[in-house]
Image (cartoon, rainbow, N blue to C red; front, side, top):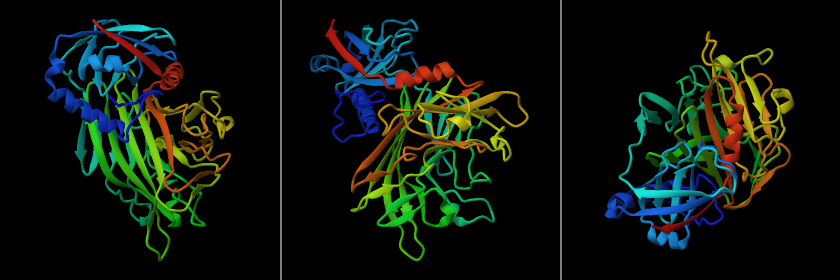
Length: 424
């Protein structure tokens, strides 16, 4: 199945998104009764990095293995925590959750028996024009499809769609804000560039009050859920809105949001692909902020000394020292809710194949927001049709920053898996 939650050098995507291929795979598995056979298979899988059981990954089968392993659902005979559990096979690929304490280059033998499709605990719900990911009675996050209006008596230029808010912790605490009073242009989980050269003009897509540019949701392409994960695919557009001139689409941006069930965290993979729609180059000029951002809740805001929340990276717990350094992850945390003593927070982990990884980060000294900003040191030029791709893990947690788990997720996020199998 072409569902590349982990990179693989052997995979050829043939123009289909991972979300499309997952849907095709599920349909094929349900249509093809061969998956109900009692056949068993033995596979050997070897990771290039240590794995800890946090993520769902995809890897290609050899041609021989793919010819004998039918599309459908299987289960590893090893029921211990080190076992793989349920796996999905489709189109010459196998998708599975990594086992615990799985060392790099350690070959794991899986004995797979075909099984009916297991139950999924994640589902999507459309509500008031937005898309919610639900588990039981809890909302993990909301993707804002509809155009949201800014607060009364503020500029209509702040109208916005195409972002995530609220984003919640496993205990259900809200960890993001929408139209915050100090920065009305910031919204939960969002993207925007500050200083962009478009046909010789400087355009600011971040600070909407200038009236130069904005970002909005264009269309929902896909949504799906199964026992291993749930995901959605949406298209956004970065719009130049010059005064007294027709607006112009400059960048098309595809978002893929893939939620991976986890026993103690909420783990969301966020994929962004931005494409230049113009015939001339678009230059993302050097700037000290902008890019891939998170805005924390209002009660984390401090106008004086930054005590409303804490930030740390994989290298330092000092947000001032960490500003504009290169980081593999950033965590922001504070009180779970006003008046509480409980803590909660959100972290972003960058993928090692992101442009200029590890990327520089902007950590605001007093406001509850940060961003991964690949243009801190130099500009990025996108020629016509060029694409800028980025992948992150968005991790929410209750309590103090789970440093050890963030380090494990960082390692596992970059793993490649080699697979071989024999028909028993």
